[in-house]
Image (tube, rainbow, N blue to C red; front, side, top):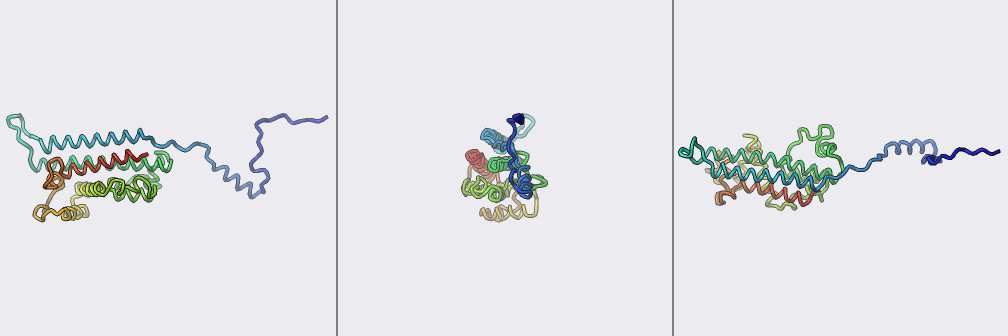
Length: 257
């Protein structure tokens, strides 16, 4: 009398059947490293749009604050005693407002870089700092996110020459790109009173053709409030640099993710 094994529909032949000991061991090791989950979702356009809108709201607030304080500000205990703000108050106010918005740009640019890293490399938000920065420390002590030169270099190295950040110069155009370079230099001069920051600032003033007598001891606040000397009050470098920030945001919105 013949006997039959009970049916087992879950039985499947081993993919290692027929391999020798060495091949079986190697295939087993390869099999053990296979990931079964799907790639992480890409960052969405809605996220980029939200970030861009938030940053542009900060720019609008900075422009409005500048006009209220630097261009039309008064000081006094009452309407009868109020007097127009003058230097050094308006100079310092211009510098303070610009420094704050420059810091916001640096954070915004870093976020947009992270967006492209997550999108192109299909990695999670948790993994991205270790790709953008140090493999051990992540973005700790990783500075320079407001520098267009560093953004372009990092984009080219990490994301390739056809990425948004790898093509930052031609994508933005020479004028906007150079204004961002100048804005970062000005931001560094506010943050550091001497050293390379001071040297680069003086070199920039010289390249602008500002006479020696005018640039002697010139503060950042005075520079962004009063120059170019022939420009109208709302076309000085404070507004030029903020427009460059906005142009960057618009290009990032169009290109990412």
